Image (tube, rainbow, N blue to C red):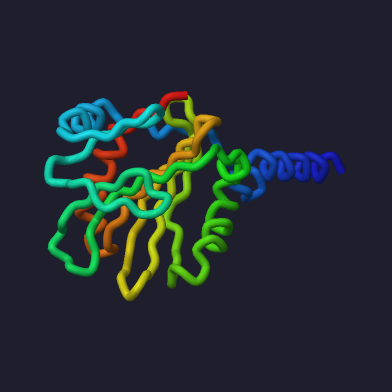
Length: 192
């Protein structure tokens, strides 16, 4: 009897230690490495407002502002249908959104993008902090207007404003553009 009790106790303990297969949001930081910071510091152009700043390459130019978009930079990649870009969107802080778990985010985003993006697939969702500010990172892909698009996106919420920086490129160009996106994102500073 003691043998079975010990076996059951050990099994339950192991299941609890393993979290029963449930993934938890663990605090992490998205802080760039020293090498990434040095690389980002060499970027020649920059954007700054009262809360957020970042740098970008010389061959990127400011683009036409769209409703709700605070700033946009674009790289001419020779594709007449689509240009790789970074958009900066801001709104009042949204505590409900930033508090979503990593598992809830794709479901919420899928509802928001329903009917706009076909074949939506989430690649990565991470939550953590960036310089002490609540942050979330997502990568996802899908199809808009017969273009296979890849999004790399950071959300920063300093308790007053929610900033969304979205790097958008084609799925075909993402492998080549991934390092450029990381370099730009590595230059971001957010004030509390």
